[in-house]
Amino acid sequence: MPQLTDKAVPDQAAPAPAGTWMTPEAYGASRAALWTGAVVLVTDTDGRVLVQSVDYRTDRLLPGGAVDAGEAPSAAAAREVREELGVDGRYPHGLAVDWLPRDTPGFAPEMGFPGEILYVYDGGTWTPERIDAVRLPDQEITGIDFAEPADLPALMDAGDARRVLSALRARIAGGGPALLEAGRPTSPTALDRLEVLRTRRTPERGTWHPGAVPDRLPVRERSGWLFAPDGRVLLLVARATGAAHLPPPPPGAAVLGYRAVEDDGTGGGARLRAVARIAALPPAADPAYARLLATPEQVRELSDWGPAGAAELAAVHRARAGLRLPAAVRTPPAELPDGAVRW
Image 1 (cartoon, rainbow, N blue to C red):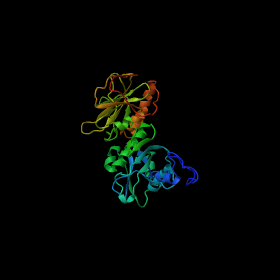
Image 2: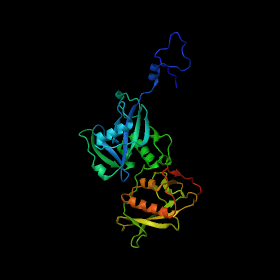
Image 3: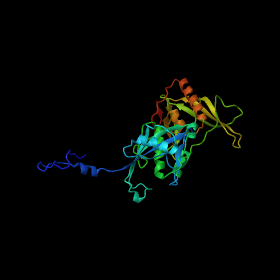
Image 4: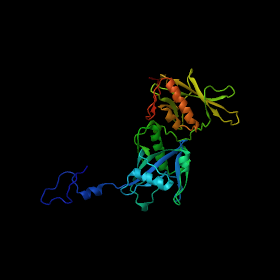
């Protein structure tokens, strides 16, 4: 870093400082000036993202906007949500910080866009009651929707959609705020590398029932909560689509419960869930799938299970306690090697 002097002009009688000395004026002129913005990522209880329609552009936006001179970014985030949605709140937890270069598409040349640092804050999960409390202003914001994460690229500017998906993955991963450049993580996690949430999640909205599947219901699907010794569970992610799902249960796994499948013309049925403790895994049988270890909460957040997801998650933790396994600490899901794994 260049060295500064406490004088605007060096003493004419003194020798000029050596090296990289600069006057304060020259040093200030050498620093890059960037815009600063703040947005808030809010989801509903189904994991869909709140996006706004505005009266000055066709694509959707997160709540947020410019940080005023002398304003802290977190204060700007709270102010923007209050102005745009009529909802008071504080958003101290950051999900991502994104650097936008000066040649970012979408800015008219006459704006003189110099680049921007944009903060993404965690607005949390809003209940139906909190959503009902939204009050839109008379102008600018014309409506809100909750969008499936995979639909964001079709609804938003491409860079905005990348940023939101990166921030959402950072929230699920739980490893702290992501540093982004043009919406892309500089240090991607397994969720980023596999681009989870880029395809629509398969809805499993059936009610949760503990115990065995009744004889009258055909089993349409079998999957298992397979616990590693640290309390995390095995999760499969399709490399081609980023879709995440639980693996099939091994022989001897205990039945945990089932989800009812609505009658789609085939008579309905059940999605069976089993539970087991695993001490080892054989080599991956299908290279099309990555194997990850994730917390049960992360599995739920990557799924579309509806209100019954809470009941299933509670049953999973009761089973974990029965297996005398610890509750896993949320850390970024770890991708396992394709070879055999033993704990």
